[in-house]
Amino acid sequence: MNTYLRKKLVVLGSINADHILRLEHFPHPGQTLHGNAYQVAFGGKGANQAVAAGRSGADTHFIACVGEDEIGTSIKAQLEKDQVNTQAVSAVNGETTGVALIFVNALAENCIGICSGANAKLSPKYVQDHQALITSADALLVQLETPIDSIIEACKIAQQENVKVILNPAPARELPEELLRLVDIITPNETEALSLTGKIIHNESDAAEAAHILHSKGIKTVVITMGSRGVWLSEENQGQLISGFKVNAIDTIAAGDTFNGAFMTALLENKTPAEAAQFANAAAAIAVTRKGAQPSVPWRTEIDAFLAQNK
Image (tube, rainbow, N blue to C red; front, side, top):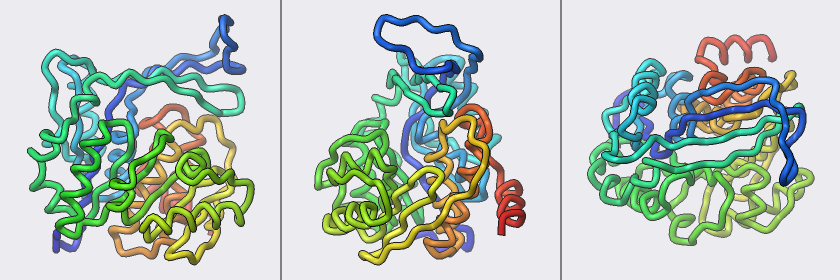
């Protein structure tokens, strides 16, 4: 493992160009609605989390694929500006960069459709080609917008070298036990927790039960994000609510991704999981007051200032 004072985070995941349309409400089948704003922004869960970690201060390295197109080149250049090392981000011949089509309603909720594009080419062999990067890390952060076999391969490599594995199980789906056995920390939201445990989360008691089910699969730390309420943090079946911050939310896109990236930054700075969750709650609170995915992600100075103002 990396022994430098500044610990290394490797993020493996997706890169998308987000096309965002704001509507009063989501369309019904066959219905056409007029939007009131349109935006193109850089996104993808992997990239969002890498940016959140980079901007909040982590030594962040990203393993990902883009298309052989102008948008892929632009995204890679922007990642570097956001303090993300992109040496393991490659352009795939004949592929386009991933695309996400996003509707945002008047309640700041969103629904999303994705075309994977180059993200689908992040193969187990591609992961193996970057094995040295993973084994040199202190932590590996993964999500579920790239092929599951590749995610499992990366987690196996990490576990063999005692690199901590953090899984953000998003988007929601059933997962093989093989992957869950490799995970040290899991960070589902309420929808994803339902998918993994069958437990609907209405309150803290429900969150504790869902966490217990995930602990029974061998996962030591469970962090269930619960929107404005905050997060349920459970370590070896001892749980507590880390309250969120009250803000005027206008767009929840990338709030969870911002949380994950900031959470990892704080953990790698040797903060306790509770302290890290509070830091990440602050980052996510800032993000939901802004539009878009990566454009909404705060920098470290902003997070520190927010926490100072909300003691």
